[in-house]
Image (tube, rainbow, N blue to C red; front, top):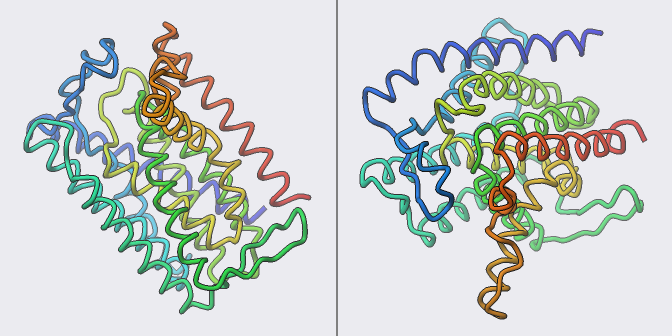
Length: 330
């Protein structure tokens, strides 16, 4: 019962802080004209979202930092080594996303950082994470728990981490295309990993990692009060990159890397749909989907935005429950 009480307190703390941040920051964003530039190539329906405040990821990032600082100050949590690693990746990707968003707002286009610069920065963050992870006693073994097989990867594990971090951040970023879609799916994913983390009693700071996850879940629910359709603010790359980085980091720290393919199944489907579309157009000169990523395909089929979001949330929730059942219970 104490675990449940702590989880509920963390969720509520994150939620309240996010509501306060949203009420303060959204009017400030409007005054500073920090608005989203919408490309009419995506969907004509999205043109009405032109000028909607962006960089809204700060609305759930500040509550996480403020809540953890408060809990540490009152002695409710400890600043463990693994929590520091998690916070580093979370904030590093947030800074990268902020720079990208800032350039888009400043020059009033959707270019931002070049693909090459963004890739180099992502690679640098992944490298630092790998070094910190290994110095903290991390294992370079990939574990297939359902087959009871451990595969030692050695230095190849560094490449695996890089692929996981970069792949997840981009997958979450691509999914952030409809009001509330990414935030809702992220809340479900972090709730799942929070439950899994609390079951990893062998992991240093496992409770703190779980608390981080639950605070973020609450903050994301608070953010959804402003981001759900019709959105009053978008999270921007600042938010989506931070979420993707933190999600991949939790998967690695809890040694449930392969579970990420299930918990983040919708994110994976979204990025695969884009990849398949690109290959199909370049190699075969034809489309597999009406438009990629997948949520835009449903838009082209004339689905209502809210119906697409509900479908994707439902699929994400079912996949998360399957992963929790296996990762915690079985």
